[in-house]
Image 1 (cartoon, rainbow, N blue to C red):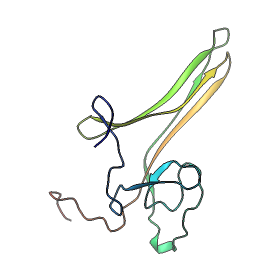
Image 2: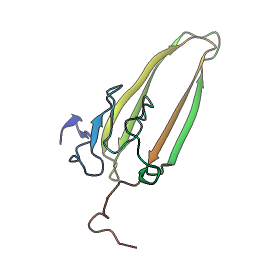
Image 3: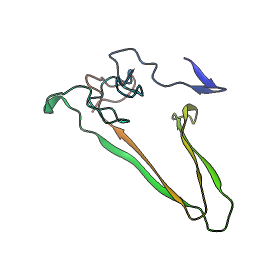
Image 4: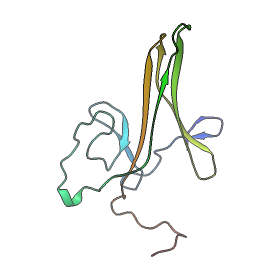
Length: 131
């Protein structure tokens, strides 16, 4: 498994055809899930699945916040950093999503949504109880 730095492992190491496998979007080159019908970054359609074949997405995590630069202060610079940790608290991915500056009186709103779908053909992991 490749690493991003000390103790930071790269995601997307799943074998092609298995849950979590990735590929580049042909439009924007963002790394996306191999099973995606629509690129979550550029919103281009990658394939047109029939309605029953498309997995329904749910959003178990959605966060939005705004920062406002007070008037009469020097400019601020910002970096939006996203990190993903596993169940042991180990960082498995970290990305700088965007950078910029705020002048007096300006604001920026940041939104995060995690969409999940059931992996097609996925089987219950070994050791988990079946219902």
